[in-house]
Length: 117
Length: 141
Length: 249
Image 1 (cartoon, rainbow over the protein chains, first blue to last red):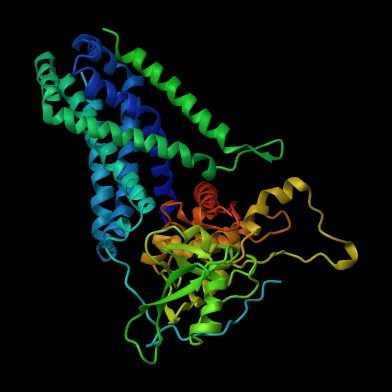
Image 2: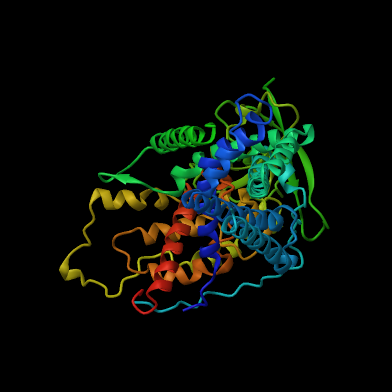
């Protein structure tokens, strides 16, 4: 049997991230990026948000969202660089920058959420 | 019977065949290609959202003054503009993702393929429901 | 005086030219003529050196694929009258992303090799002897792969696929759709044999679901859908073999 490629795993992460991002990111971004800063909807207070994020379920949700969305970006962006800029010959560098970036982001998310007080 | 056939070997390089190189700007040559690249670029804005979310978490963990500074940063006109563009792209991601969903999964019900319309519709309905639930959690004080 | 339409046809003679160039022809605009009729008119009456492939002229053999105004089309199914009111002449070029042998004729061995590599035939562990009768198949079982069996190997999808143009190792839309056609056939037992070829790094993973292949397919095969379904299958197999290394096959 031929050597097992890791592409299926990366594609699975990309797909899961794509689904998760498609469902939740628009509303999150609308609220946090536009509705609250521009005053269209009164923003939640610091106390409430802090208490909300402290909930283990909320922290798990945020972690999963960041992890999957970052790997979604990494996979898609890697192929965009391959096809859009035709720099396949740099594929090892691209691979490490994309997935490395996603790993760093995930680690940062984990660190912030684990130490959230 | 799984005997492998030896197929004829053709010369792969022929000096007189004309091969044109695909231009770096191939994606500008046709509108469907450009739409495809824009769809792929939406992933960058998805990643930007993750950054904003994590900055929010970090600000929350540093106390109410840090959070107030974060909220002020979000009101900076340049950031607002960036987030407007981001909103466009993440919605574009959602719409294009739902539109191709039925092709990626051949869902069969009672032996017949479910028409694309129902799958796309179900996705939009779920999107609306999820958005409402999240809004309810996030706009309370 | 019959109405005419102008065609600009890309000519390339390997003996004479270093590069292809357009040549303009005026062809009668008959309402029932397709681009293939125009090319045959040119060959018969104007310029006998024009070289192109065609056969059935009714959209089933898959020979006459060419670029018409930048889109891959079967020239036997593309009516001249649709382009009568366009600005500028009708441009006919050989299929994109394939080497050109001469004029409108392209070298398709790459496709042939890739097609053969996915083993597009029924693979059985043991053939049932004829005395035991036919393989039975219900309409539901037929429905699972029928759409993919409509492929006429015209390779318009390859001409539409930018990944195929950019990546020489990518198997391509029709190849993967045909592999799926056999994988989904209830009579076939060769899915794991095809998996090795398809699931290797660039076999199918180069596909980024541009979707143009499905748009240009004259037989509505939906190769893009086939590829995404196969990605899902391959991923599930990969996870299964990871979790049950010895039990998977």
